[in-house]
Each structure stands twice: as C-alpha cells, then as structure tokens.
Length: 220
Image (cartoon, rainbow, N blue to C red; front, side, top):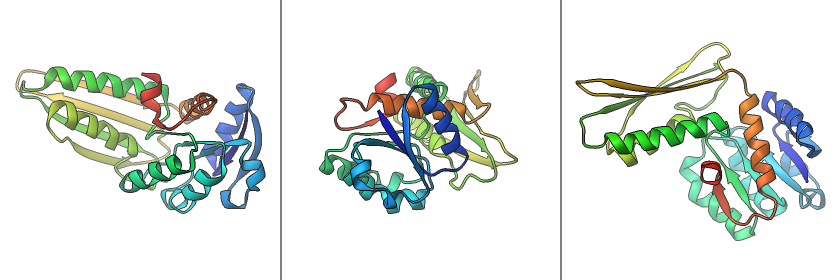
C-alpha cells in the first residue's frame, strides 16, 4: 500500500511516522493535493487532515483521482451528503470520522449504550470539550458526534461547552445528571498519536473495501 498525506502540518508529520511503523510507503506529503499527479494518486490512499475550507475545495479532486481516502478533517457536516455522494459516484472507497482515536471510538460506544439505558429516567446530558487554541472549529466534530448519539438514544439534546486553551490535544466529557445521581465519561488525549494510529488503521482497512464508511462502524 502507498499513501499520500494531504496537509503536512503537525498531524501530517505524526501520520508519516505511523505509516512507517506499519510498513506503509509514503509516496508524498502535500499542502496542495490538487497538484498531485493523477497517475500517482490512483495508486495511493489519500489521508486528509487539513482544514474545513481546504477539504471543501479538495474533496471532488480526491474522490475523482485517488485509490481510496481517509478523511480526518472535520467541520464539513453540512455538506456530508454531497461528499458521500461524490465518493459514491466516483466509486472511491472512503473512511471518515470526527475522531480516529480508538479510545474516542470506545467512548462513542459507551455513551451510546448508556444513553439508551438512561432514556426515560430523568437524566439531563451535558458535553464539555477542550482543545488547543489553534483548533478552527467549535464545537469539535467529536463533540458534535457525541451530541448526536446522545440525542438519538436519550431523546434530549445536550448543551455543548467549548473551551480553547494552550496546546491541549483534546478532552471530551459527557455528563448525565438526574436528581439522584450523576454519570460522567471522559476521554483525554495526551497527544495526537492516537488520531494518527487510527487514521493509518483506517487506511489499511481500505484494501479491498467498497463504499463510504464511518470509522466507528468498522471497528465497533
């Protein structure tokens, strides 16, 4: 397998390291994915960790030219149907996630199950997410995903508080409170390594894959 990294910032460098650990060849790391030779792209999985604006500008090129794609960029929920449709039209496998951390995906599963159990028993949900000051979207894509899970299973939409401070990689807390007790689930990332590990795992899953999939549906 060969990979091309779209977006060669901090995450791109960590993904490069993880690709090497998993024996995946890095063909190229680019800040301008549309400058990649289509002949090379057809041999590669595109791993995209850019910005919402960059992904919106690039997703049609990625869908039309790459062998497969792993999309870790968030902030494009409003055009998800168009993105999924474009990859489906081009027949390009795609795996996307609001968070590729294996631990966060375990959090998704725990919160989904807990909300289902608590439904109808007077529990109020609340979500708090904390990230570094450079993060462009708020609430985070992960917090939005958690909110949708809670709303679907509990029947109540949680308020989401977003905090931006320092260089915090990411902390997500989901609280369920009633007059009798409180449950709290927290995932704290110590670095971006977990995101990169999950993204490379997703890239490996695209071998012989068809269609568009959310990462959590592939591993839970």
